[in-house]
Amino acid sequence: MLRINSIDINGIGPIFNLHLDFNPHFNIICGSNGIGKTTVLECIAQTFSYNQYSLRRNSLSNIGTWSTSFANENSEANVKETTIKVLRPYEKTETNYNYKDEALKLVYYKTNRVLSYVQVNSIAKDPTFNAFSFSDQIYEGTSFSEIKKWFINRYLWSTHSDSLCKEQLENLKLAQEIFATMSLDFSFDKVDPESFDIILNTPKGKIVLEQLSSGYISYVIVLLGIIKDIEYRFKNPHICVRDFDGVLVVDEIDVHLHPELQSKIYIALHKMLPKAQIFTSTHSPHVIQVAEPNEVIPLVADSGGNVKMNPIVNKKYGCQGWTIEEILQDVMGMKDTRSALYKKKLEKFNSALQDDNMDTARSIYEELNSMLHPDNVLRKVLEIQLIGG
Image (cartoon, rainbow, N blue to C red; front, side):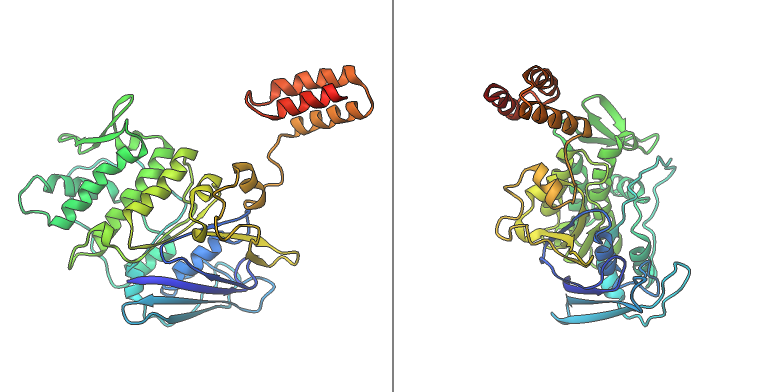
C-alpha cells in the first residue's frame, strides 16, 4: 500500500511556498499555464526517485525543498524530505536512497502518448527489472512501448488451459473491454494469427490498434498501460488491477482527447482502480466539471506571485454547477472566451445605441445575430436592447 497524504513545496519551479493535502483516491490539479501543476506531480513522483531529479530550485531561492508525507505498509505517517540545490539541467543532486518498495508502487505517465506501429514476429516473454528500474521510470516516465507485446502474450497464452492464473485472465478481460468504453461501436476482435496485430471492430470496419486516431490512442494506451505495468511489476503473487493499492500519476489526463473522452477517462479510472490513489493535472473544464468537489485542487497565483489554492472554488460542490465558460475563466485563467471580432462588433453595437444611431445599431445587430449560436439567449437580449433603444 502507498498513499501520499500531503506535500509542502518551497522554492521549486514557479512555487515559492505551497502546502497541499490530498484525497486518498482522486486528485485533479488544475489552473492556468505555468502555475505549477506539473511541478506538483513531479515532486510527488520524484520523492521516490534514485539520484535523478528533473526538478530545479527557483532562481530566487537559495535551495528548493519539498516534504512528502506518505503512508505505506509500515506506517501511516512517513515523511521524506528532498532538497534541491542545483539550478541548471546539467547539475546533479546527491541523495541517499531507500525507497525501492515505494517506487514499485508508483506509476508515472508523462504527456508523450504515442503508440507507433511495431511489427511483432514472435511471442515475447515479460521483461525483467532490477532493483532500481522503477525508480528510473519515475524520472523518465513509464513507457507505453510494451503494450502490444504484453497484450499479444496474454491473449495467445489464454487459449492454453492453466497457462495464465485467474488474476492474469481477469486483467486480460479488462483490457479487452477497454475499447468498448470509448464507444459502444468499438470492440476488440482478435489477434491476427499471421501478423500478430491487435484487430478492433469500429464503425468504419476492422482496423489494427495503431490505426486509431491520436485521441483514441491517447485514451486506450493510458488504460492498457496501467494493466500492463501492474502485471509487469507484481508477479509473486500476481494481482488483479482492481486490487492495485499504489499511486498512479498522469500528467495532463486530457491530452489529445475529445471533450467526451475527457470525462470518460476520468470515469474509467475511477472504476478500474478503486483501491489506488490517482494524481493528474488537466486543462479540461469537462474533467473539472464532473469531478467530486474534494478531488479538485485548483491553483492560482496571488498578487505576489505565490501559488496557492484558488478560494473561489466551492468546497462543497466543486465546479459541478459551473458552466464551461466559468471554469475556463475563473479556474483555468483564460482571460476571455469570446473572439476579438465578436467583442469589437458588440462594442460598436452598444456605442450606436448610446448615440441613438439606430440604423447602425440594426446593421450591427444583424451581423451579431448571424455570428451567435442559434440557441444563444443573447440573441433575444440584443433584440430587446435594439427595440428599447
